[in-house]
Amino acid sequence: MTLPPGSRDLVRIVLGVLLILSLIGGALSILRPFLPALIWATMIVVATWPLLLQLQRALGGRRSLAAAAMIALLSVIVVAPLAVAISTVLQQAARLSDIKVAEIRIPMPPVWIEGVPVVGATLTAEWRVYAAATPEELASKAAPYVTTVVRWIADRAGTFGTFLLHMVLTLLLCAMQNTNITAAKTAT
Figure 1 (tube, one colour):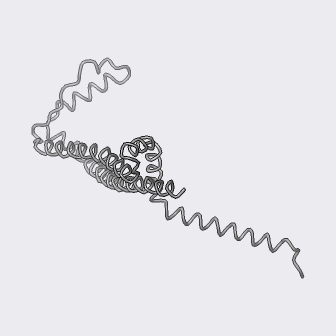
Figure 2 (tube, helix red, strand yellow):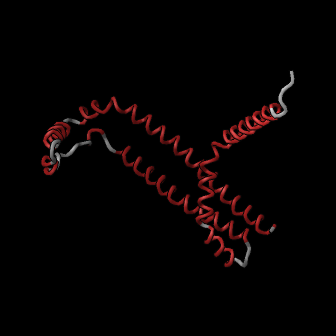
């Protein structure tokens, strides 16, 4: 039994396409952790391209110096707000650790809350119950939620670490893209 002439070619083409698709899928699965940083780096480089060209002209046409200055500028833009945020969190944590449980008091509700339609009266009544409670009663009511809050904070800390890793990777990719574009422009 002989096969028609085009059938072997069809099988070869289908298997070739499947192999190529599986290779693309494998490459994307390997690159998946780096894709957010690569996309951000590309957007940053494209958005700051005119500034890089102006900086290059100001530095006498030296692209490597302009790229280094851009990376230093981007680092300051990223690091400065993070440093301020971290110092603020640390200052507030120190302040909160000084507060004694016996000093915690909830003030009486503002007058305007009672005038809120539908929920104002109920909200005011509940608020007054909490305002009249002793600090020990408030602590016992909050105790079931402490583990949930601690877990949420731990999750955010992990997310913050991942964020920092992506920011460093983004800055490195920005540097590579700026210098690779330099090499490509000088080669042509």
